[in-house]
Length: 333
Image 1 (cartoon, rainbow, N blue to C red):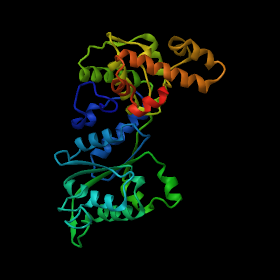
Image 2: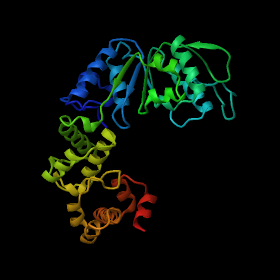
Image 3: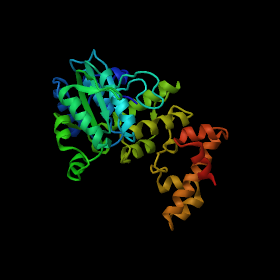
Image 4: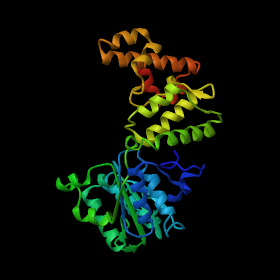
């Protein structure tokens, strides 16, 4: 997935700076303006935005545009980790600290010394983990699991979440003092549906990137496909856009992507009734009386069509559809 919004060049997303990011939409322009201000400081940054909006990409670009650019950029996802594992991941552990700890391991905080630590899904941390992060950010001090020795690290913290932090604070699920500590500058990435002017360039750059990866020469979209991509609300944001375009490029046998190659993770929600008629007249007739049955019928017919395109290979079909092999088998029952 390329930077958000994608640069005009083919720059590696891991090395992209804020100079590689461009936008024509006011919400994204405000986001980038604030990100540039944040990059010039050493204040902690909080990035807010829906899942898939590009929070990690923006965090890395801020790091690459800051005075810490020569230091490490260490990314850490705090979601769904036990306290012990999160503690070990963030601050490291000594040999013998817990069952299976056969050697001393540095944590993310220590590895990020003189650089940037990016904690994604920060709102998912337990209250215990929040307390430890608060001390580490406030004083630059931490302890490895299984050790009483204080260690120090010079770390610039960038945090991110898609959850409503103010509501979590009100419900007692997120520490107010930690919020104030991590939100020196708060940057909000707008959802993709709030950036209609950027969408055509983002689509074009994704097609170019997917074509390079797959060794194809895709020149563009047919008019129907283009209209549907522009009209689609993109609930999965840039992550969904990247997957849909990559799949479409993989399925396309000509230089122009047809509308029927556009698949979404949410059960073909790009498909319209007109497409349903093309794929399955029976499914279309059902749609006029029962939308739920229509969706199932259209979905099954589309899976069968993709299977035919890949020569009946279920593994390739599942990959093209963005679903697991077991999910594909279940939908064909």
